[in-house]
Length: 122
Image (tube, rainbow, N blue to C red; front, side, top):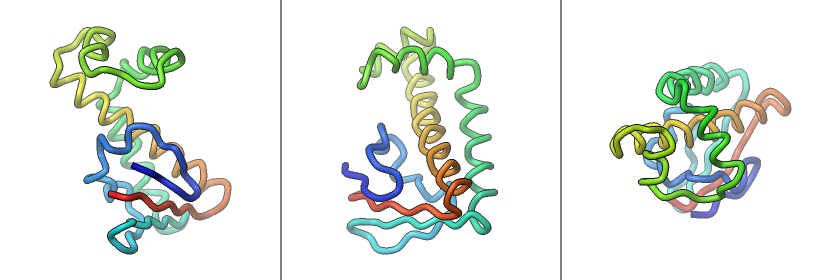
């Protein structure tokens, strides 16, 4: 899945690609889908979603950050072992972690430039 624009190379976008609208923004087109965010209009919803993701990721964020300093990819079972949780919980945490990283990139772009856009082939 290719992502182009202000946010490129976002890892694990496929984990939540059907749920990307939770960050707000405006979706333009279907294939490729273009998403546009403006600071005044969308920063609050981006912040809200980041908070939701932090609540799910919780104490696991430091372990995941540490794990991914040495790994560019992961196997689902490995994450369950690293986090010491069952597979379903590991999948939920990874989805929230992926959203969190993505949301942080959107927020940084909004704070620096006032807007953010990218396109992705869903």
